[in-house]
Length: 337
Image (tube, rainbow, N blue to C red; front, side, top):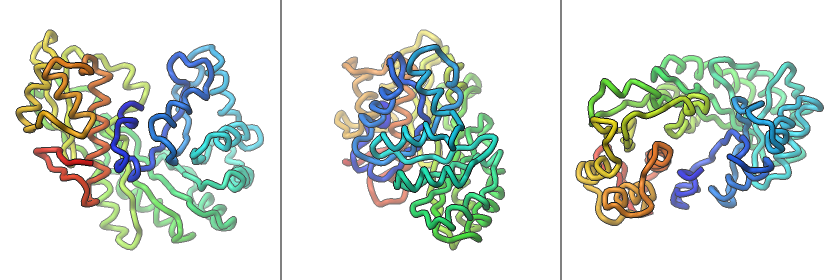
């Protein structure tokens, strides 16, 4: 949320985040998590999905509120009521033992903010049936997100053919739907063998480019996980040595301390020199790196803040990848926004 909050307004206007809701830290009620999202993005639309990995995590009022949203009674009535009460939230089609599709789409029509259909490419449901039902009801602003998931091995490209097939199936029903293809492959491990300064290639752009080449008559929007991982995986990661990551056009460059007693300040100094960062920057992530080098506050002091910097700069790089916005190259990330 901090990485999203600190994006420039022009970048926020280019993206549509789909957020998996879960109770916010020690918040008493679930609505606090929604308020935190709204603090981060302002009066902009966002997809409101649910983080299944947090079910039954704690016994609090917030988690009791959260659990109610998974109730499949009356086609997820609780979930759709919650979305309707949340300004700018777009519903994400629920899936369970029975889709209860007609009733779900009735909820969608009542809310009248469009619909996001997130398709797990590794375990897809009947997209043709969903597309047909949406077309028959003449629903507008329906976006199918072909989500290839997070791959710890970095192998997203094998899902290209599946994405193509799913999109073809949907467009045979109607050409009016919107499509997003994406996934995530920022690694969770394997850094010990890479040295102190190394690059990590990403496959997200290659995946989308491959789908576009085959379906050149369909507009495919780029999507990715913003260099995040599955929540359960993130919680298991414990870094023994400080590491800072900076985006390239299709991956990341990483600086890692040689020993556990290394500091973020030392890494920040290397980045400022290697990336030729000026003392002033309009980008929050770069500002924190410069402040860390100079021993000023706020500074990067933990893996959590370091990850927020990476996510922030990665979203800027990808949002402006081909818009004619700030200059984004593999060597330097600059530009006034």
